[in-house]
Amino acid sequence: MRARVHALLLLLTLPLPGCELDVVDKYQSLLMKPELLSMVLEPPEAAPGARVEASYLLADERGVLEPLGRLWVPADLTLVDPAGVGPSSDWVADLRARLSAVGLRWEDLLGERLRLTAQGDAAASAGGISEATLSLLVQVKPLCAGAEGDPATLLEELPANLGCGAVRLGIRRLTVSTRASKAANPRLERIQATDATGRSHPLELARSDDPELAAARQRAAQHALSLEEKSTVVLSVQAKDPTEELEVQWISTGGDFGGTRLKDQRFAVPAYRTGTGDGDRATNDPNLYPVWLILRSSAGGQSWAELYLRVEPSSTNQR
Image 1 (spheres, rainbow, N blue to C red):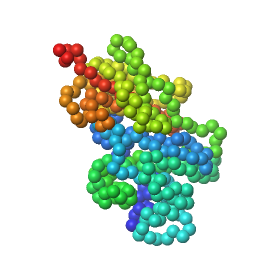
Image 2: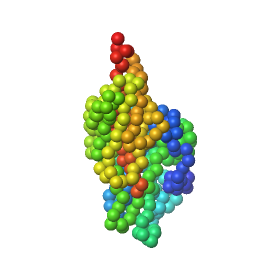
Image 3: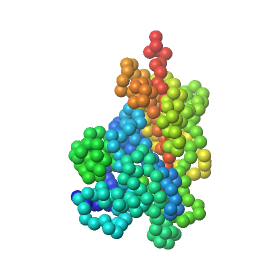
Image 4: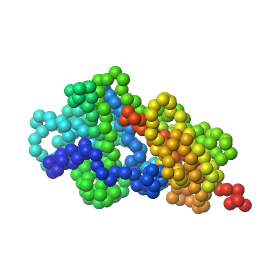
């Protein structure tokens, strides 16, 4: 068992196929089932010994999703082999020893966020730059193999549970360097909506760096922008550093982004839905739609913002 799990840990340091989002268009904009939309490292580049915080965004066709289980897997677990750790069938005990060597506990790997210390080998390149891989396993439905409720199973039975869609895998690489000027995550100034009449609306946002994310998400939902069904709106992004080259990706649970990824993005509002249920998970409102903006910088940084749109019936439907 120990050898098998060690091999799986090594596997998590490599790019894996089949990790694309399950969406209905090639631009990955309309979410259809549970997916890891983003993993954020703060900061994305750190000096050896600096503290780094990792977080993630998981959602499905009904909005933000709380996983049934999760397990963070730092690359250090594949690299550190402390003295005194011999062959053992209890691989969790083995991992505890490895974690201790890099200042972590087993319990740290199960949290919503992971705080760790950058472990860098300054001699890894001529420029004093190295990379460390961080993987995240999240359980989104009952397991196809292994024991429920045991986070260790997420790693022990990884291939089977990845294959059946019970587990989602995310991978990010932390840059560790001694450079004076380091990469940072993109910072969003605001998102503004312009409706079909030309009127502009500021939008309430929840952001990846909000210290009280649940409260920010609730505020964003309470201040959702109301739009008439089947109308169009343009969502405009303004970053705090307008000179930075950014890649934008829009994702929602309904509507149509038209197959583009633009900083001034046209969005076609979906039709109004009657009845209740099967809507936004937090409110059970079938006409409340979360929209996520994922920002990626050319230097490797990443961040995200979340806003809400509420669909209202057209005047003809109200008659």
